[in-house]
Image (cartoon, rainbow, N blue to C red; front, side, top):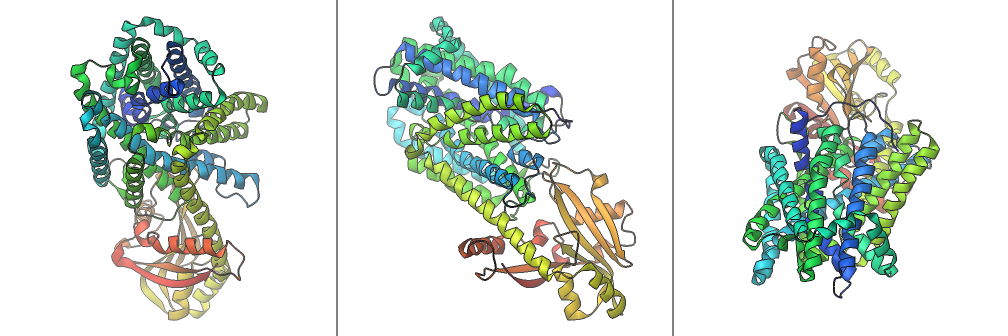
Length: 635
């Protein structure tokens, strides 16, 4: 159970109906393409190599129905969506709500941060698998009418995926407007195909009763029941996007899109496929496409390919957004982030992440080759992520003052369901489940190494940093000459003296007439309004500390922050075109003599720090006005 904070308005900027249609394209693209493979894999697990019985089909479709109701409708749509951070959702927003970022080592919040970062890393594994299995399952529809085209499935999938990742640099904005309407049409097709199947065998509707799922599972061998649960879970993958994308559309449009459009269409289609399998068990190889009339197969393959590209685009954009949030909160090194449009801050492109994700996705396609094989890799990362989200949401509810008994009862119930599905998916570990876990493990390791390394560097900086009192004494007593103009020194903390300024005074024995000590602080809220952006502290005459506050969903640009300060009259008499920015460039030296991480991890951190985006470029400092000072720091 989660609490209801003061919510910010939807970010879509449109009418609720517009936001609802938009949510179909971005939020429900992944779960909306699950009918391509979910029921097929579940009934194959239920048949376990033998003939498919009607009882097995009804049991599977009943299980899928109640998974959609309990996990997506009740847990996510009704409960988890209430745990927002001023309108924003997602696992990073949960970590910010729990103030885990600055937790002291050894405390429960520090352990919680590790769990949360593992959850965030799992999204990268999901991001690599989703495009692969979605596009593969769509193109495999060619084999229904033309089995001879089977060798072309993988090459066609690779071509589509390469085109998708190449398109990212141009931004999704130019096709974003059609995402919602196309997916609305897709859900309409799903519903119509489902109705067509149900009419042929209306008795399948009896599976609405959860007893079909319960009785079927308990009468199977333990390992078969787990295999069925793991396969049926494919029907709910993508549900976590409801929470992650809440800030883009708002809580109500996301709920409306689910209950009014997505859920009915999915249920009708799954029951339609089940009706087909009851009357024709031989359609088990691809019940989705065989549900359609023969003349519709090829157009349906093309339409499914478009839908899966949209689903893939949504997960890729989500990974970009997660990367930006993680960088802002200090969980990942700075990377080049390009804004692909000037009027929508959420549309970004992260080149390094894009091509690493492309490499992982293409590796999955080449390694597994079919959607059946990839189904073994899909689900394990998502089920673990869902369990982590339930746990963190419970802690947020406790923090907001909800009854511990109520929280344990409600969240505990859903946590048990999550753990059952995770256990079921864990049986697929050696069938491919290792692949997304390996990716997630690598990302989580880098996150934890980066965060620990940054703390070690800040400790080392603190020992080298000149106290503010010494700077005042130097400015008053020793620097009699002042250079014309204004100097900006970037500072990592809002106290003490930046190392670049210490180096400058040490070597030049002078100061500029105006000195600005600029610090960027990222708050654990999504956005900071312009009115609260700039904080000014006068150190002494001529030396001013400027603190720029940003939320973790905002991009910190120093030049824009200083422009805002001047516009607000907080920095009078400064010509922004006549400023020199002095920035420290640190070289990290791993050392066994200083307590910290293992030397090999410090070496990894040094590599990441050396290849991170330079401060000037990341913070949007004008290139021609930058001077860098190098410093060696041992950790």
